[in-house]
Image (cartoon, rainbow, N blue to C red; front, side):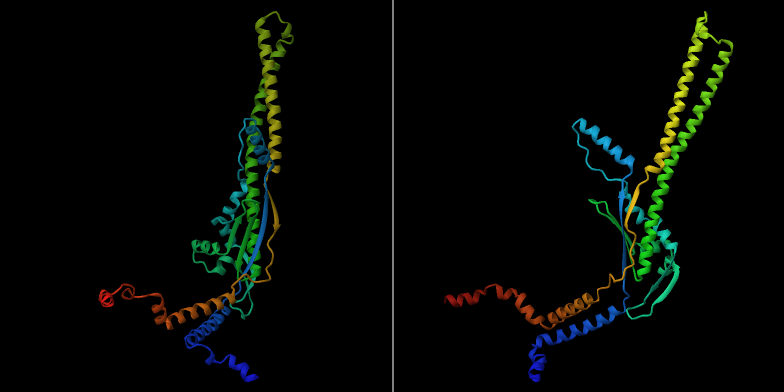
Length: 334
């Protein structure tokens, strides 16, 4: 029974045209397996962010759509400010901040290698000779994409260390949040500062008009009942000017308070759904795919070379076999 079982795997049962390709294919698979073990594992960490539009943006878009609908015009959907988030994450400015920061992580040089601890900057770990080379290497590590339908922003990093991948993703999320906060506060702060400066000027003009009107009242206390038309005209003009300047100061004060509120309320909110997990399973390399691909590729190439005569006879028929021979045709008719 045992001899019959092993006879199934005997080389005599394998056609001669398949023996050499099969042997070389298995050899290539073994070499590919050894090569794949020399490659370190890669780990991917991802952070998912769902941006929320600011109140002013939503209200302005709603007002514009309502106004357009009144005239029978439909306003198509427009992208919000979070469209630029992908460009911010993939920018050189973000890459430079990530490269110069220090990280604490562990790596293995190959599959069975010892774990090595690192406490260094990413720029030093990647051995980038210049900023351009560091930026190119960062492009292969950090990536960001945005779903146009759900507006979900995904930031991912893939490195030979799970800790390093997680730290890079969290660093990128922090840089994006800080960028949005600083830029939004700067825009709102500039608006509030301009309104405050204009309010200060309006108060100075109001004070000058008050002093002028006060000086006029000291001389013409009852200017309304004065017999001189010029006195009544000047008093009415000064009083109207004072009321106008008081209204301007009141309006600017309200605008200043509104600008301070907008500085806080109009900040885009980043709903971080996933801060960046610590990956436990590797994302690559797929060693089984490497071995299978090496086996079938070597097997196919070797089989094609061994049976090249048969393939040529079957697939590449010569022109002489296809074209009829006139002499043979004459003999047949004779």
